[in-house]
Image (cartoon, rainbow, N blue to C red; front, side):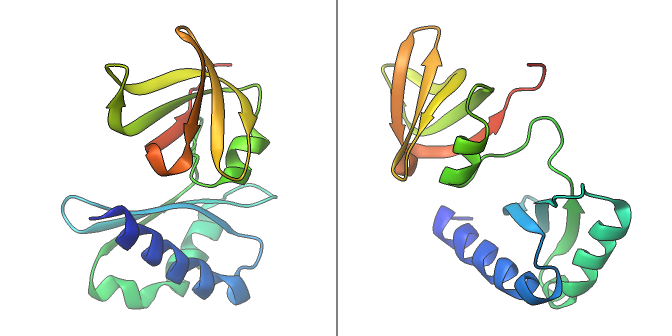
Length: 144
């Protein structure tokens, strides 16, 4: 599935949940092989089984096209929006790039900066600034 299709699907889901579950943040909506729509959600009070079931119930119409999986982000939470990077400055993240850069497809290091257009990571090979449009996928690295 293309990134644009994923973004429009995520926007559709966010709009649907905005009135029924306004405190739920959709961190990532992706279609994975086998036709499963996987959602990672967050909530200020934490993500419970009851919340996952409520969110799943609000998205019944997607069951015509997909199997639905709703879960918490876990320790390796996905980072998909500029505010996610800002929120976790000082934590370690792995950023996978759309195209190889200096021979590498990913950069892992400490999040040291985030703006509306890019993220800065202190990696082993030095400080790297990556525009969001060059990021294929990223997540926190558990354990720090």
